[in-house]
Image 1 (tube, one colour):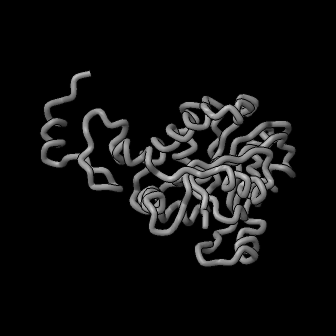
Image 2 (cartoon, rainbow, N blue to C red):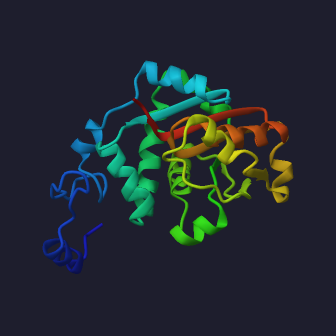
Length: 232
């Protein structure tokens, strides 16, 4: 498809720049946010990270893609995604994540899952931010996975405070009973196999609260996927 002349002019006046490196993006770059070389150089989780993740979460399966550390490019990426309104960045990263997931032989069991959903925001926080970044990651993933997408499967009834500087125990108390199932979707729970998507996993307290609700609702298998996970 031929690029309109006005887009050529706009790109000349306002060239697309990598948000992590300030490199000018070429027309052949896979996305309009991050230089492909920079994206592919982001630090990935390792086997020890994934083992730690397995012990943190009460799901049947779990996986994360990037290591999240302070002052890293991954932290910058999440900042842009959550606080700079870059919803489409989440969508692109979701597709990228899903394609990475499918080439890993240990996740051939992904085809048993039939529903995909994201960890929800409370309605107050949603109004403040205008969108749920995890939901956009989820939507991007589902363009590749092609499952039944249910946006509001779980409701966040408690407007929790930020978890950033809380201890593990206080994080657990902060999110305790913060989620309930959406009775409108009551038939989606029993014996379903669900993929649950989030942007960052730190202690796993938030995801474990959602998992608790899903288990009590009769869900069969649960896979937790996060774009990043915090590492020391």
